[in-house]
Length: 186
Image (cartoon, rainbow, N blue to C red; front, top):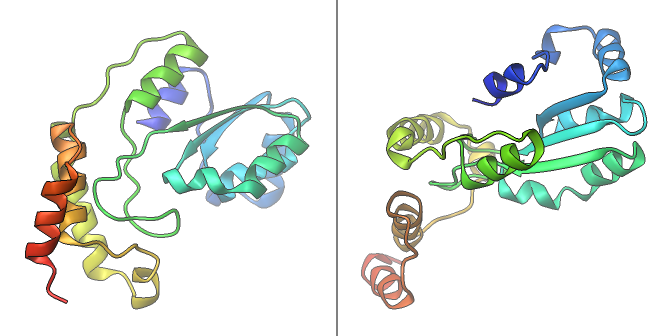
């Protein structure tokens, strides 16, 4: 979704891992505008010219806490746009988990504000089964070390997330407490 959108806006989509570092730096040094996910890719802003227009897509909502990233962007005096496109249906973190990007309300607002276009918000029916399948595959095969990066969830956390993301309603505290009491096996 992200690559298709940015390509339609005239961006060249590059897989940096396929290029020698010198070629990566050369591309960035000559760019007027860049887009990437938050993390190692967005750190490459350090090789860009001052005043670069930078678009950063969060890999997880906790990526907003990457103070070092935003300092790097400020160092280059970037015109910075940040957008969250994540669906956080099941537990994940910016270090581990399934990163699932979709046309969220945030994406719709960003595209409208920055590019002057309208995009439709993607409803859960379009992604839920794929997301859950990818998450189950990841959790069942990930190493013990990487599993430790995922937050621990209770049944009440799961039900609250399903209610929020699939039914578009917050789980009320009395129901959450009742579910936690019933399913807590500790």
